[in-house]
Length: 359
Image 1: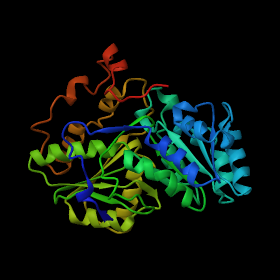
Image 2: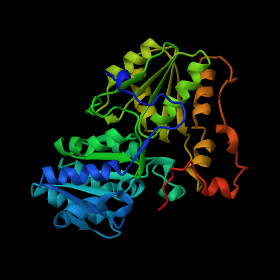
Image 3: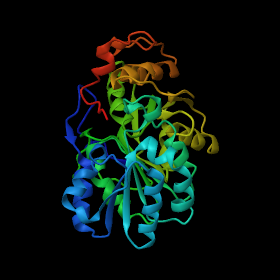
């Protein structure tokens, strides 16, 4: 665990600054530094920011059409030839649609293929078919696979180089387009097998990754306003996992809450629960995420509210875990959508939070 509290530039109040296509620009820059880096796309070139690499390195870009299984097989062949292929699609397609090819053609022979899954979890507005709520579970269960769950611009800028330097398969999970800038990129360094302490408090720990980290910081700010000391532990390296850091944080707080833009089965929450159980750490614990259900077609604003993953809902879950009730001062206007099946007005289907990305 690395203490980066001094590198956090977003405290959870209001919305953070954002940067556009941080990953795509970083991959294109990596292409200049490393001629062995190639880029593949499965008919989603601009939608996965791969068009930026294509524009600067057209001879090393391959459009594979709407055929993710074939793309993974081609990437495996390129890796055997000594290249470092980055294969791109939506997270649901590059994992679920071609899992057998990943397992047998990439992971089993431990080839140097980098799989990039965009629009993870319920961040995709495409409904259940396009929402990757099981990708972490599949990739965690795959031997030889490394996993990064990215939700911040500085990390997205560093992730391509880190993935390329790793010898073997990598699954990189992130949202396309605008990403929040929450860390000082000159001081923050993304590393394998590390977790990052963003905030320290003695009452409850929010353990998070990817897009949920922004919401964790917002929830922590609410909890602090209500007198609850809150630790935020950011865990972008899902595999290998910083078990020591997780254990240390869990041992220092009264309760632990994990946040998943994913099913609670097999995601970060499962990984944390395994650490707590195997190390016999007795602490109040709860996983937030999708509870063995598929997603829905709606705006990000509506759907995160529906699955109780908004900052005020996270804060209330922490209060419940601490047996403080659910009364929360300063919760703002997060509750306007409601969390039930009502409220499917056009504004909630289409409006989003200003940063939702369509197809």
